Length: 442
Image 1 (cartoon, rainbow, N blue to C red):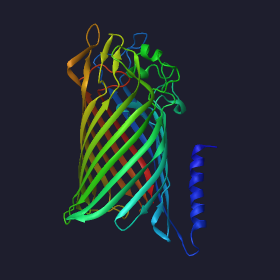
Image 2 (tube, rainbow, N blue to C red):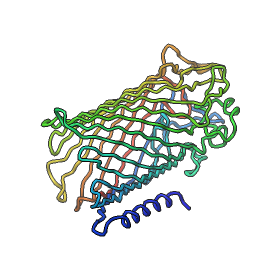
Image 3 (cartoon, rainbow, N blue to C red):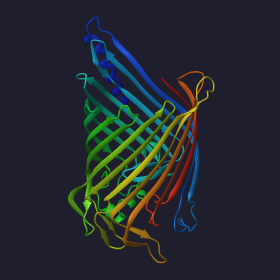
Image 4 (cartoon, rainbow, N blue to C red):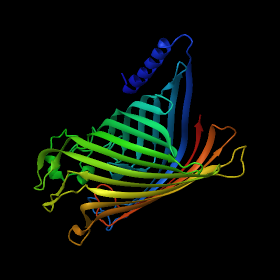
């Protein structure tokens, strides 16, 4: 039986159980949420290389790529409450997103260009108010991600396809200490499996070179899932409401442990050790939303990330070991402005948002790579860094009903780095996309 059908069978079983276990006087409250959109997307990706890229015959390869395609999005949450237990809500969620044009996604801290993407996310969970001030959440979830990033791939067997399965829980308290506050503590655990990211297969040999040299891939069993891992994540979030000022302050600290299930550590002599790869993340974020008035809101966000990994890199062409290759720290800042116009069209005011995001990642010991006339060289005095600037704007107009709208959006990304040699994906590129579509929200 299809695993998605099994998940929804479980949801229906809980609904039946709630109805049969409830007293005769109890009533089930049904509050459905639906967001759906259908749009046309056009995108252009342009990679900047220090030297022309050539194919096996010596012909120059293009550095830009243009595509267009349909996008579809559906979010469905048939929330269920029980009058006999007013603090309990069952919250199943189904989310589907399909993108049929070029799009850039960050995956395992690297940016990749995908020609096609299908994402399915499904949740079965519950929210319960323990008291007036205490609330808890418990969720089980799964995700299926399908992508196509090369001409020899299919959407069903893409190199970076993965499956998630796990759950998370959170408990929170609302209280007043001079100002209204809320504190939340949570834990998430899940598995992520990449069934097709295998060493030296016809699909993966070209792109996986950025992870391991071919000689090291040949030393692994052919069925090694090089990217599969488990995740344990814990967070603490503190929110302040500065009444009577229309300003919020949200602070969050998050720690994530990522032990790989099959990928061994590369040792400095270019061989594999008995220890498995393990990455660890520490994140600190600050959010400052401010409601200027009913038509204007602004938000300033800052985030810092530190990643430490025990994995090394070995350049077999030079016989050169690079310890701490994946360790970095990263800073990012975002300014977001949302607005409504003071006039109406078809009975509703136009609205929209505009945001700009800056991000810089500094690797601690990974040298930058530069091209020379004879060979690519490492610059140890100038560790590799990447810097990106992202701009997004969306305009939305409701037509004839609150639940129906049309929208137009633009998304642009420019990234630069101090490396001019790339493996798998470019460190220096620009990406621009326009989207026109319709949406319903209920």
